[in-house]
Length: 147
Image (spheres, rainbow, N blue to C red):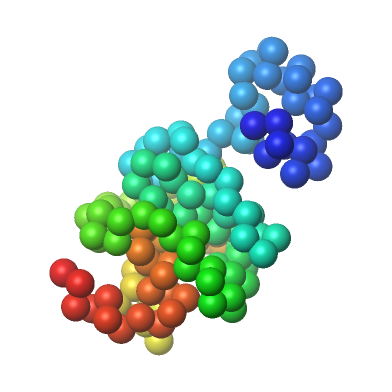
């Protein structure tokens, strides 16, 4: 956890005091909006940090990160979750932004109309269920036939 905070420019003295006083600081804790596990892991790819759920494999991208990562062919390596399980989680609606900004909206990419993902209208972060980022990055029409 210290590496996470240090990579975000946080003072280690401040971190130590916060952990002693209150446990892990609230702004570090992120709960998965789909399976509600708090075991989100920080994944860094090409210098871009995203948060991936260790439970369901969904991925949280802060504003602009998904579009930036999409440019790299191997970026789909971060989408390690089971796409079939992702389809099950895709049916869960009315989810909260993991950054604490309230309910997110379901969005459809006009050029990839088979991919539904959630977006926060406050911070513009997006949530992709397992397998969705791979389809998004590749423009994968074959996903239509994986039911």
